Image 1: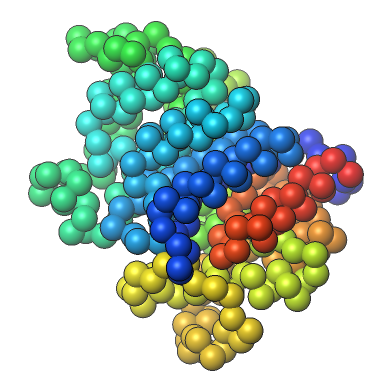
Image 2: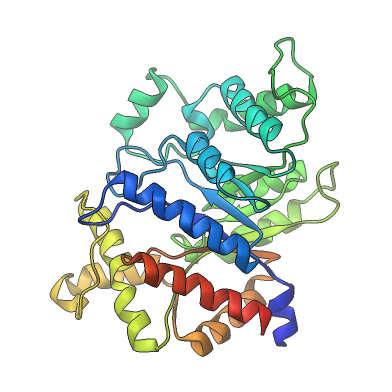
Length: 332
């Protein structure tokens, strides 16, 4: 693959607004604004934030509010949700929230939707205020939401009605891949935590794709963990914060994002290491040259139109540097 092909691939950012050990959510939002302003300058296409709940190490639970904060502090980059977990909300509320954002910041809003709760079962029940909510109702909820934007509903979403807000479906398996294809919507796959399902989901999306008013051909975005630094050794060390975060999820210990460590073998068991290497298998870690080669290989394997980069790095300056290195690859 030539470098020009990598340059033709769009790159975007997924910010989980990490709360680091020794930091606060207020620090996280300051870092979010700083990162968004930098990646806008560096030429990234969009900046997404994700809905998670009851996770002390992620600050973006009120996702539309966090998106608004980024929009107010940037000028041109597209900002959106990666994603809003639709089963947690009445579709009318999401139509009004994102209709408001699009009205305030025309042409800059993306609405990425997931069907998972983005949390544990107890918290999901607290969010939905009902024990009979069913994530399998997602296609119906999606249809209702789209109806508010098109005006094909007896209830009107103001703001929202008549606005052209791109809707993306997000997924880590085949369900949303097939639905996105059937509806002719862009699809974003969570390869950053479900790498083994990537190829099957993308094949399903592309094979089921039907042209629509939104798209005339499939459009694939891939989420990928990238930890870039000036040397391979420094990147490997920085990546131990990401590894510890996933280990804490496996252990159900809600620690904040931890500082890097010199040796993960002192932290995890060999069984935990094997399980996490499966989940983090598509992560790209290394120096500029290493990251370039791995990104080229990953793009070639997936045919992705766009890559959404997640860099869970403890030190904010090191996190900025990781995205800066990626931007250098696009402009070399």
